[in-house]
Length: 291
Length: 339
Image (cartoon, rainbow over all chains, first blue to last red; front, side, top):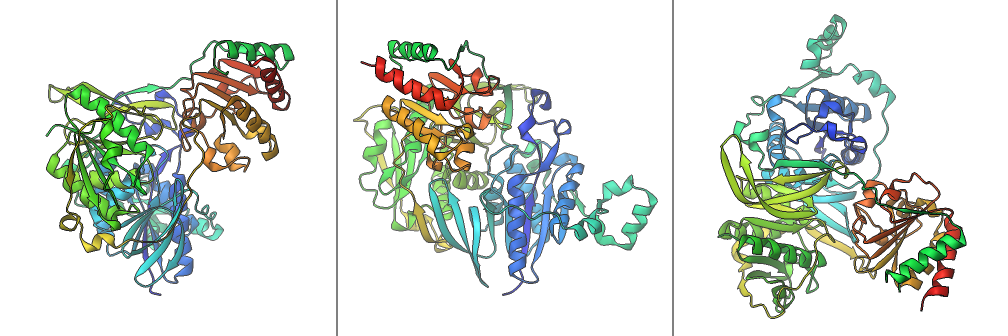
């Protein structure tokens, strides 16, 4: 089996379990600076799937590609710690405010710089939007087939790959030719943990921006070991059309947001006594809620 | 032409529940806009399919009937849909937020270079003033959806890159027949003139779809249990209560993950959305993931040891106590008092 070149699309996301309305800017977009960030959970599953393929097909290469603000470099380092071979950041203020259409355009411009490739893997969806759109939109722009909701890779052959998909009411086994794009379902295996040796090796990995404020020791280390420098691609580096990126490339706009507060209705508080429960049942019958 | 378009999912000659909901929602939007409702359906052996679709008030139905179109695969369906949408140029296109719709709609949005809002729970029509252009855009689609794990509701609009597309969550739009005898114009699509051989490059080798016998959405009464129920055996008490009241039993994600109850009975953002007359939440704390799928119940009873469980804020009755005692008592006093 020939080695495969695999690109993993990964996103740094706000930890949406703890979001208040103060985390939104007046224009309705997210104020990412106010939130703690994590590696998007489904994307970690995609990384595991990629590393699993690399285990099975010797010589395969796993590249983590992320688009985001400067601090998304953490995603690249995390990828390295877990076994990725390379990492690239697409980062430029002008990419900010992108919806899924502008994001997929930007990612594809970056992917094209890495072509040819065999496989693009990404999480099914990101927890900050839950849209599940960027994967299929990238596949369309790359003119390659897509296989969504992948749970397991059953077989890898020279010209095709066989995967199990998790659908809402069942499973489906499909084959696709290379190159193709797959989105990975959260029911696939969890990502392996960090590898101690790789952490030692890559904890000094920095983007060019980060190096600008680094101390001399780190700078000279990067001169000796250039692979530690994480490439950072700007609008010009990927030759992106300004009309198709960021807010101006995004057809969907947030008109307004409302925070959801669980409304405190006038609940009747009851004990588990016989009297309380019998009275409640009587009320429900009286109001024809139960009959 | 100005119109609202719905992509209908079909399998084994049956139009999916979600698509019927979408047709109803689409008709309401079309009436607000004073424009026709159109639909497209791609599958196999669809000779009489219009009978299931027309009553929702569909003015034009595009049918592509070819055995290769079922089960659903992305590329042939995307090719057909984009071709039709390019020609008809509707204002609004709706898809189900299902494993099919969420696979297909983004691919189409990319081809058409238009906006797509995922997982909407409310659709409406309204205006928007764009300050930069000093221009008021009339009759836009308001695609309203929960975001950030359900902590906010966002109204998403798209004024300049049409069509305005949205996927809509299953179970949130009310299904209503518009006119049982509605007359629909049927347009049969010549599949071979649009779909190419290479669109079938992804092959389905095997498929297991479970026909669900569970109908949570239609149940007037639901007794749902959470992780707090503690075991599969304890769930039997909830089932007894549900059976007695003529309802169904459901569970939270935590209960499903713990193996207490089947995943096809999961209620919440990643399960079924329900709106019963009565919802009894037993041992459910009330994570947004869960409440997003049941908060529209007419009446909610929460049974919980924890007086501060978030679900109590939604409840009409809060019973502070142990499930093991409360549920048998409810059974007992229902039997005693029901006529």
